[in-house]
Length: 119
Image (cartoon, rainbow, N blue to C red; front, side):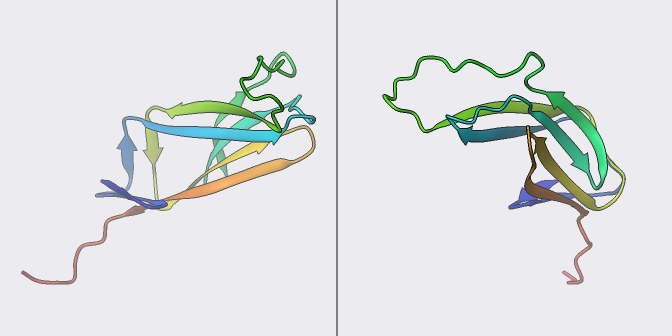
């Protein structure tokens, strides 16, 4: 198994990873705090994990060492354990906010193909 850029290559499919951790950062202007933030992990088009980051409404920002902050950031770690990979596909993280769905990058899963070169 190896991760190369946005691809995770596995020896065989289907495959079962013991654990995959994904860090998600959501950034918003300081004057427009999130009041709703649902983070989803989707394997192809199937939701495999969902976290309501703000179940009790917006978070009051802590005092900052920055005199005039311009943005607010929330960081969440999603642990997918175990992660079953049935076939080649993609893992995408999306965040549903008050008025839009933000889509993150994609991690592609695929099987390592046998080399066509003979030794």
